[in-house]
Amino acid sequence: MCPLFGVKSAMAVTEFPKTLREFGYDFDADGKLRKLDQSTGLTTREGFEFNVSEDLQYNQKRYEALGEVLNEYVYGLLEKEGLKRLPVPKDGSSDTILKSFVFCSDGALENDKLIIIIHGSGVVRAGQWARRLIINDNLQSGTQIPYIKKSHELGYGVLVLNTNDNQRIVAGKPKKIPGSEDPCRHLDTVWNDYVRPSKVKHIAIVAHSYGGVCVMKFVNFSLFPSIPKNLILHTNSNRIVTVLQAMKNVNEFTKRIFAVALTDSVHSLPAKGTDHIVKVSRNWVASNNPLDTPELSLSGDVDRVSSGHNTHEMSSWACIESLFKFLEDRYRTVSARTDL
View 1: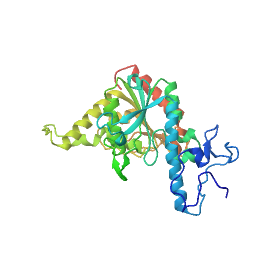
View 2: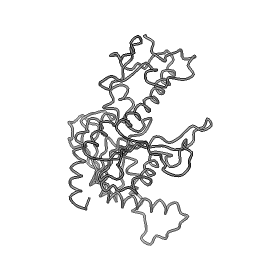
View 3: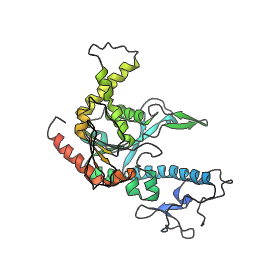
View 4: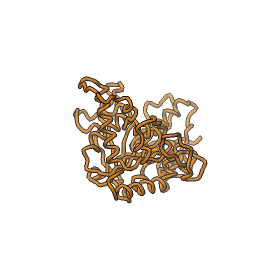
């Protein structure tokens, strides 16, 4: 087995490399992760090698360390597309350690139309659909860069969320980030801090996998069937605060969000109060059927169509053209009238 840069015996390693090239890899012109030739430093035709040691735990830790390096690499790609970091939460503590961040294009919050991009759960961070695809396929399928480029071409402002960035290590212990304690809280904070006070009139949401769950929880439809008409407000009631927040979200959702494009979302919807979300949404699911083939949808759920690929992680990349056509069709419809 040929040694790679940064590969040592499992017992000797105390830390892993901090850059791709130190790991012995780089992306080639086609966006594929390739080994570097140790003598020339140029990319070869060899892809990522997981098993570089007989120590399975070492191989896994090395893979995870490479993933952390890729997080920073993709952040750099977002910045090359002109996106800038915004702190989450926006205000509050001056302690920058306990803050998350999102990426936003210049003028996005003053633009007429905005796309909010939300990844799924797990290890992925802002700008990524799937780490496995970035490592084993290419940057096109594994990152959100094609979506960002397409959004710019069509005149959208872009806001890329970072919903899995939920904690920091402080004094050797994990500590939750206030306002970004979990993916759904992250979305809610970003909306309250940046989207709600913005001048944007037309908002589209693109969400993959668990990102769809965050969108549905954000609106929180399930509260409304149980709200009594003679509700007495108590300021010390967390339940009432949650209800009022959900009502505000629903009102804004109906007025400002003209489309929700989901890719193999794992959400569920309650039986009532979902008319608008069903009306403006579509879910491109993993399927063996050709792109846009109608798929079985549960009663009351959003329309489901084939993404054109049978792999969950590939759904976003496979359906990109169809998805943006859906967004543009929805935008043309709503921009011509006030009723979304």
